[in-house]
Image 1: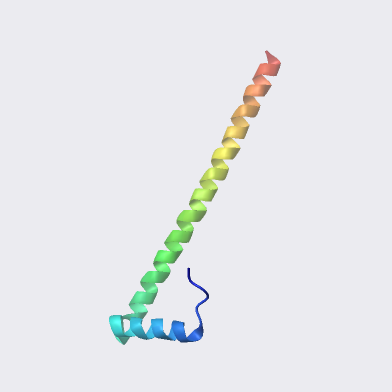
Image 2 (image 1 turned 90 degrees about the vertical axis):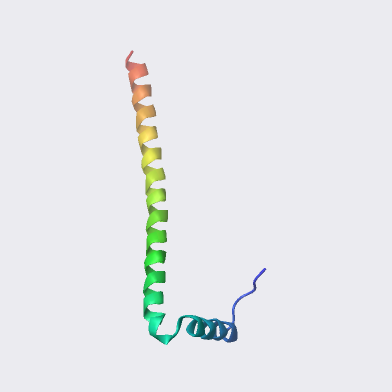
Length: 72
């Protein structure tokens, strides 16, 4: 759908943002976008860690069941 953005397109986007938000609020907007991106990345990595933990605990429980079956 979209091809790569070139320099003119990026400049146009920045000009529109400056007109919309004003120069005074740009630092606040940038800070809020940065916080949102960090939060999103943190949530993504948390889900991956949760999946790994769940997989490891499932593997441990199945191994303990196999060991218990062998002992019986």
